[in-house]
Length: 215
Image: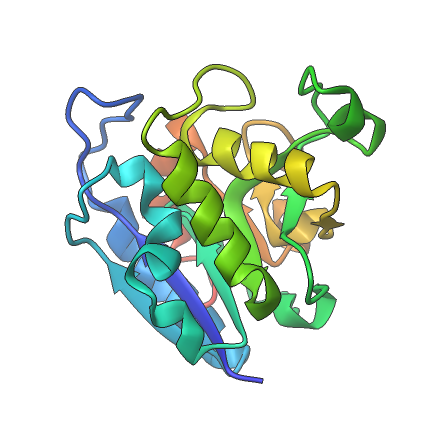
């Protein structure tokens, strides 16, 4: 099985929420996530080039540009994630015919999704080969008039609307996207991937030096 972990970061002036930091947190994420990819026996790419849409849709680049076809599964990770030495291979937990992500345990205002545990977070998402065509087609259809509002908006909203249409997904263990805005800080070292969401990005500057961070 040929696998890829990829990240995307580019400035997005006047196009959505941003957190100002005095350091390049994405460089710290790249240092840690690239090492995690090695541990997973996966290729790694960090992308930053413009592609004709808001950077908040960078998760869709493999399907827009077509290079996803080189891989059996591709895994997107946000640029504010650090991997820990409490290693587990995310690809060992996926299903090969649906989106794989961690659920937020929040109400999405969609009956089907809420009855299945709530919407997923787009900070870590694994796309297997069998859905490349359908997710690419969904993006191309809806980017002309992007959905807005609920479930975090942007890529997260589009991915969850795709899941609602498909009526299937795999909920990954929380340890693969431990969301610092939502869940216990004290438990973060028991996880595999820590998501330093919003103001928690500042923590990355010190925690990259912690022996418990993979690098």
